[in-house]
Length: 205
Image 1 (cartoon, rainbow, N blue to C red):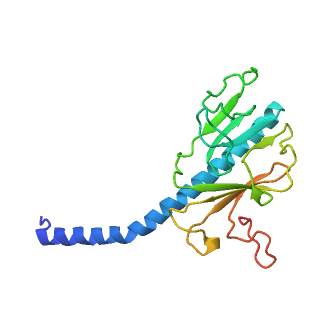
Image 2 (image 1 turned 90 degrees about the vertical axis):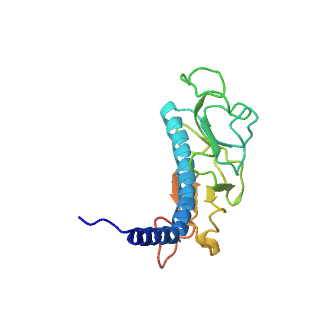
Image 3 (image 1 turned 120 degrees about the horizontal axis):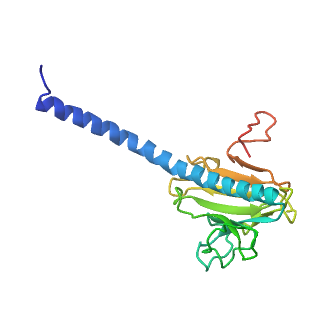
């Protein structure tokens, strides 16, 4: 049985190396795009958790974007740290999630998510009816946003490390999470036209 010669082995290694080098840029772009989706899905999951807890407990539950998850935390419409709690978590983000949420000890945290969970390069901007927004959404026992907002609440997620968004002429598929006044939550693609008469797309914004 004949084995490989040194020359054949060297050629094989060179070809494999060349193929890997060709694939690295595409793989890198995929990884950066995956961080956008991870961050957007994290926001969507946090909002859905807050809404479901509000309906389940028939009380107001808050979804809050926080500058940090320490006890110096403040509301921030550009942070991907979030806290779901029954009371305001401002200045209390390091509190442990409550086993018994019926107890009166604030802030009665349900769940927290740090910014670095699979999306360290993703950035986000929260807006209310197109204007800057602090990221606090409160759901009542009917699953509606309270107080009723003047328009949709949006969370635009991008990744400048990977490049600019498709909508701005770049290559990154950026995403948006929308919350309506009635409490409906959806993730969509701002690059796709949801309301276009010629070619509406259910995944578009």
